[in-house]
Length: 245
Length: 245
DNA sequence: GTAACAAATTTGTTCATACTAATCTGTTCG
DNA sequence: CGAACAGATTAGTATGAACAAATTTGTTAC
Image (tube, chains in turn blue, green, brown, red):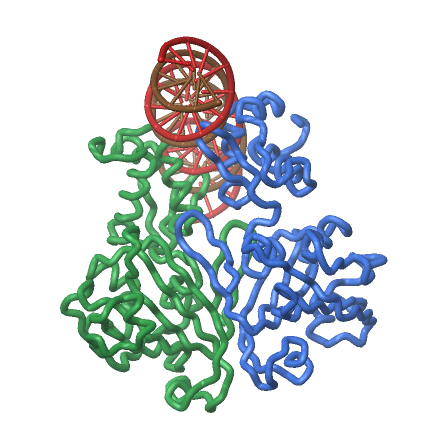
């Protein structure tokens, strides 16, 4: 612990966050007390508090005076695109689904805009996100083939906790990203998209395009989400949370 | 200072933020040092740091080790809707404008959706935001008439720093809000909107609708922004910032 | 049993202090 | 004048300590 570089509060934060993402502390349980964590990490309580505060402000934990730190979610709403569709639907007591459409491998024949970002060898996964069986969003995820060796339909369960593609990419393939860029634009439904989403052709839709990068400036993935429903945020207060409409 | 309620770090934070919004510390200047602030507020350096950290993470200030705290902006991107169009355009070296269209007073004859939120007596201001003279967004702002007594066209300059309507509402009418809700949806341009934005009828557009509330659960304002250009965010890293496309 | 109270636990706030690292400033030397 | 160095200034990290406030747990009395 003490041989790693960087400030202690960062190392404690990194360790705790990794433990959360690995399921070492599961949702709904309580973390060890500040004093206990301070002892095990061999730092002062002030330092461990600093790390915990970061996790609270990011939405992983909820602090309750007199009680302790509760694990709130493993996929906090860090952004719009990166927000877990699965989590937000489950929290509303509805049933999220992810209908797999197809997976396509390209090698030089991908659209130029994609190759420019991710290289020639890319794979595209198309899925239809549903709520209680009704189609809500068409999701196209593009990845460099080299970073997801052996990827196949089986990596994308249609129900359960692991339908979040971001969890799959991080858990199964070790993909990490530190920054992302998202754009929201407007378009009208084509024949194909309209049939998937069950809306008439020419219906105005929202398109969320999200590009994620790692620290080495490489593009990790590109995702395009077509949706008929509005995007809703709650702003201000402590932290923001995308809502389902 | 010491007679007010609540924790000290909150009081120091509130004071500093108010000073920033009032222009007591102007953009580009340096704040007093931590030690100086600690002395003037009669708190410890740890406490004043906590307040400054909050202002840094919200985007008002930039901290530079060995140098000091720089005032970065008076309207940090606290959200998409609440982001200052003026600031973001100026930072790109372009010229923001706000063409005033009209101001209309309603008393019971406003659209029902508006009356439900803001009451019967409401006022609607329509403006066209421009970049280098080109129309970019049509902005409709709805306010309860009672909270903006005497409002008129003159309150909305077409150029300069005060074209941000949020600054006007806060500075001139003392309007404050703590939470807001924003939705983004898709629509197609009507005749009127199309002519304002200089796009063909039926062009797919984005609509950003933002509702702001104060602590007493009252709705402070409602704003609708029609735009032809995409909305872009940078996510991850330290904080998010809307970009101009 | 349970209601009321007391004690222990746990997070929240605040301070004084020490040291490190980056930046700025003034002085000296060529 | 300008470069290089030394010192002062200022933010960054970290500790230990103390008390407040909220919650949980344990105990007692009825």
